[in-house]
Length: 344
Image (cartoon, rainbow, N blue to C red; front, side, top):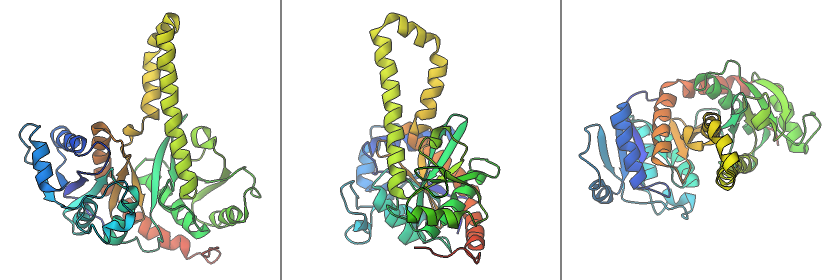
């Protein structure tokens, strides 16, 4: 299934700053980009909040979802106590063809469960993987998984590699993306038994596998796509986020402490604006949940209206890119190779 038309289903009550920032993002997306938006959430609350804004554009639709999933709710709540949550309704809109994609800054685990259970999986994929775009000195690195699966078997990392390759090619425009396996050293023998088996499986597939990579290679290496389990990927993501905030914070403090240093930074403000833009997660909007049979983007819980607006724009492009179909066609071909089993 791949819907290329319709609204973007936006979880209006997902995220630390919802619903005000989600409404703001929806209005900006409609007015600046002409993207039709379905704001999904408790309709009374949405109407009350919308009273703070100007008149509504015609391409903004309110869709009722009375249940709200908080960040503290267990992921399975969308299947049990909160079946009419905004996450479920967003996924249903994509499944039924009314929406081309869903976007949420809400509970990541619950979004994973809602998307997987409602949209189903691409044939040949066991589990969805979150794919994050991180800055690299000469471009970007796609890292997956960054939090959806704490542990992964070798054949699941193979699936991530295939999905990441076609996403990087179709959405990011990278020709024959190079794929690396995150490890503690570049040598094939590095890592534990599971990592060595993952290396063996990936080396016998159709992806452009370049071998093991290390943590430094995320930002300074040659790999366009790096695969790892969700525990490792989430640590990489959070370290990158914290490092970016620290660098910008230190530069600002030093500029305030020393007039001469501040003058130097002022002269180089163009370069530092570029650095901040590269390190700012809001530039990329959200992380696609690859593997589910429909376009789903999961955003940072602290996403601003700007970040959500970018996620909406990116979600529409992702839905129209054809990558979901390409993943479905190619994942089966790679998994049917006689020397690629399900591993341990």
